[in-house]
View 1: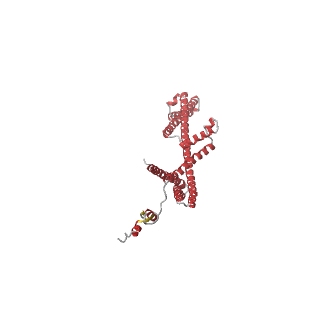
View 2: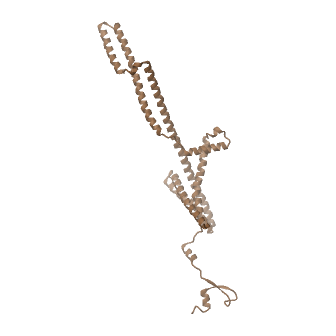
Length: 331
């Protein structure tokens, strides 16, 4: 393969890489700027595009010999790249923080859901325990309803009234009253058992719904947070922190780790299109205007070297002049 062809192929590759990187950089700066206003978004997009091409343009200006303009473009390029870098840094750190917040919120929702389900399970177990204890102490509760016992209370009340009408509340009346009191106690127990049964059924329905939702719930996980934790742990271990403490980085360490990672991501995203375009245009010389190109490309008159009687010294002359001197022009 010819060296020039290989170099040109690499330059075309870098041109494609620079185009893709520029599109990504423009999207990042636009999203960051749009968080302020659409005017900021458009301004940052134009700065990003200018930063990508200003250094290849400066190289052309330097080849043309315009040193002051080259220096001015260098300072302007550094400013544009710095502005683009800070927009990328803001967007990168913002997105990383967003990922962390979303993961934390998802974890909180998942934990609350699991806690609520555990609470319902505890209530269900408690209601069932109370009902089982009541049925063990009063086996009739499972077979008698409160409404049936109320009918017996009405009959006992009528019997008491009849005994009173016959001549006062004698022994039979007192027995009826005692029977009525027992029935009322049984009614209270039957109602309590009925309430427990209703609570168990309602709690079971709620628990079934929460269990169904819990099966589709996901624990919040953020690769960004995992990366931040990992770098923070490595940093603490390298700085001599004890093993157990190094596994749980503090807030300050995690904050600086987040900034450190975001800094290098933004740095790479900023310099990728600029560096790729610089390599893509490396070695190209600036072209002149259309008229200058035609003049430069026009063929020069052919010259021949005349020796002998033309003069004591060898000199270069044009063919038409030589013909005129030899008298051939008239012919």
